[in-house]
Length: 275
Image 1 (cartoon, rainbow, N blue to C red):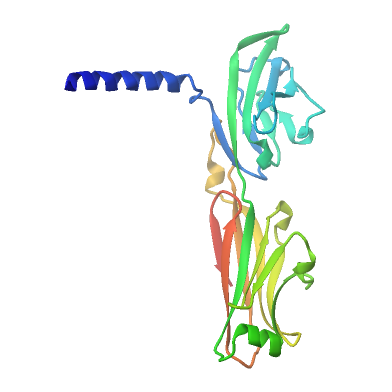
Image 2 (image 1 turned 90 degrees about the horizontal axis):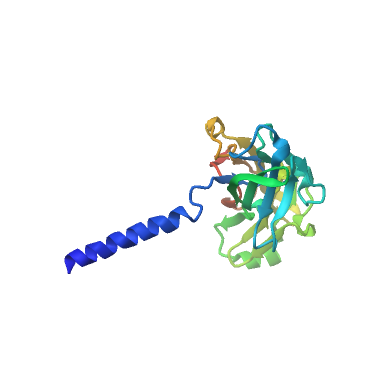
């Protein structure tokens, strides 16, 4: 009986390996974070890229494959026309990758309307961070609750931009304040243009500024990652650095501002610096 079980197990292993081999597991897989540039290799290219056709398929976005490059010429009616280019080696280059670019890309070669060889498939995976949440919380040594101090002492926590404008007026930001815990949170989706953008959490008392915390987002490329060289890997994902500068002002009651940062944005390293 033990011998029969071993034989059955061996048969399952062989069957599994056959199925895996036919499922495209050897196809190139390229991983990139949104906002970066990516190169998709075409390993079946002929000497002349005029025979190269690139198609894109994503069953969640399109019911049929979409031609991006036809016989070496870029299609003008595609939504990503401006971001596409054909490399000298017939690779497909995509600038400023978005989360909608993920899917299956196929490189084919045609000579005299007849396909030459087999398809070269490349799977593009895009890592996209949806949002970042910043929170400021006020801790006070006082017998009065936060709600009481807000109502009767005129304390207020608010988020402002670099110009000092209250971010509650901007629909891009979701701001919530809890008087139970004296905490105010800001949630937004980070954009490429947020590089060097500043946000401030301010504490005021009767409309007079008491103290604030300033946050500046900086994007940079990790030098260690930029050294990677592979036809199936991509350029390094940016390192997102949030620089936190704390500015304290004189205030009668002992006050502490606690910063909590929850960040879900891009791939790569994440560092938090306090100055």
